[in-house]
Every structure is written in structure tokens, then in C-alpha cells.
Amino acid sequence: MLVPINESTLMVDLMRQLELPALVVARSTLGTINHTLLTLEALRARGVSIAGVVMNGPPNDDNREAIEVYGAVQVIGQVPAFDRIDAETVGRIAQAIDPGGRLLDLGFR
Image 1 (tube, rainbow, N blue to C red):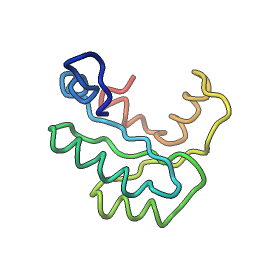
Image 2: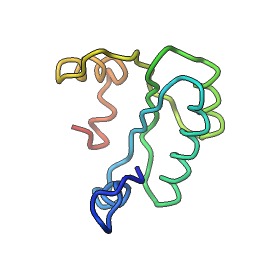
Image 3: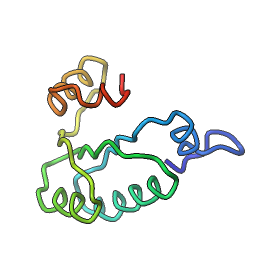
């Protein structure tokens, strides 16, 4: 999110310009609560709306609950780590975590 795109623009600047809600992908393991809450805070401070969080890795209900409670955000899905990511895999993941197409309604295509 705070990754420079060029000498004067960060990724979050592009996110704001696109005016789409952010979908935060967070690992499920140690350190995720701090990293995810900091990311959510930084997005909100810059006026970026948040569609939700997807946790990646082994399921961890305690971390999920902490992110939802302290981050005031919905964890909309948990996905395992994948050896290979391609269009087919992403499509299966999207269908599994968002079967009703809510993210499509928010502009994710």
C-alpha cells in the first residue's frame, strides 16, 4: 500500500484515484494482527474504503476475531497458501469466498 509507483506516487495514491474499496489480503500467522490493523488504519486515514479482509494461510480463528473486532472490518474469507496462482485458481478462490458476487458489485472485476 505504501509502495512507491514512481518518484512521487504511492500505491495508496492510485487506490484513492480509482475510488474503489480496498480488499486487504493478510497472512493468518504470527504478526498479522499488527500488520493488518496498521494497514486498515493507513487506508482509512487516506480516505480509502475497505471491502473486507481475506486471510491467507492456515486458519487461525483468534487472529481472525482480533482483526474483525479491533479493525472494525469483516474477514470475508480464509484461503490456504497456494503453490501456484493462475486465473483458474483465482476464480475458484473468488467463488469460494464471495459466492454472491458482492465484490463484483463493489467494482472488483
